[in-house]
Image (cartoon, rainbow, N blue to C red):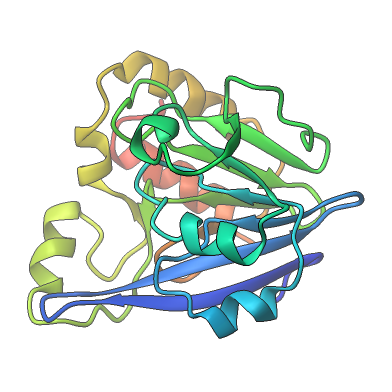
Length: 221
């Protein structure tokens, strides 16, 4: 997969029951270089190969496992995470809270908090240079699941060998109307591609496929 001003690092979180592919992105902005959602399984060599970054972002409370190693590798980088991240990782020097503190890269990498899910506080991001929308755990697209119980897990999530909104994700929604309002906002954004953290990116027809996935779960009229 190749997108403008973007690099990717692919890793896998392995257990006997399930192998979970995890995607990390590096965004080359005009005055910043952002390491987005560093995977917990990234090796020191992979982190070094990323090169110097100005900012490191955890887009959800479920994707903070790689932040400590990334921060140690790049101690001058500013750390960003969602509400609740300071309580989860009080040992890290967080610079800003997504959706609370001013996000300085809005013109190039727009921030879209997904409200009403306090245990996740996931944030979507739209990278304007590539017209790619980044979602973390909201959608999955793993065509070839691996692991003894992968079929069971992904069938429960409603994402077995298909691009879909995760049913597990929706179980965290405490304020469904607030989430649906943000989904309607996403439907109005200008993007071509959808890049999930887990599984294949949906290129070129990402927007119509994402809107169909929203409608399947009753998130969009």
